[in-house]
Image 1 (cartoon, rainbow, N blue to C red):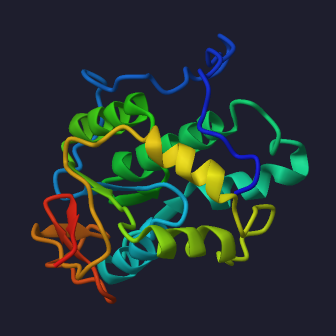
Image 2 (cartoon, helix red, strand yellow):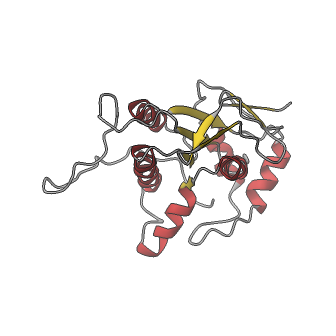
Amino acid sequence: MPGLKSPAVCPERWVPDYLTPGLPDDFTGVPMPAADDAVLIVFAGVPGSGNSTVCERVGAALDIPVFAIDWLLGALTPFGMRHRPDLMSVGGELLTALAYRELAAGRSAILDSTSEGPNSRARWASLAAAAGAAFIPVVCACTDEALHRERVEWLVRGIPGWADAGDWANASAWLAAFPPWLAGRCAPGHCTTTRRVRHRGARTGRARATGHRRIRNGALSNH
């Protein structure tokens, strides 16, 4: 994505006193309706890593809504948001609000984000814990550099208000600075979840995503 950098320090969020308070940085101790059968899945990875492809397939297999940061931010481009220095922080707040709404209603949610900010990771984990929902981070990586570069430079997703092809130098710098998740790193391979989840508040099942990727306890293997 040309010109898109990793987020700088986000300006302090502010909500006027006459409005409902904004969402906290840490949901620990925040009272929420129980969502014991729900799950919050966060897909992460730098551009070209394949996280959006896997994310959409898992969402379709589980019948869980997918909220993607690039679709949200692209919709804001006509309103002058594209060149804001805190653009990715704005996107993270939108994802948090959508996840909060779904979990508060007892429903599951999937977030598609780069998620290179440790604070965002911890925030989403605390949100899931406050709702009593399972938290599953899935980190995607492309271990073939030539293939990764081709994906970045020739990517076409057709997201309104968002870039298709990206800049490899920028993606490489982003990848080098990407902090590891404790759940591990994933690479393209076969994909099957190993935990049962209840989705849409009714059905339970073991999710199997189509394609060639295997997810186990939040880690995507290459085998």
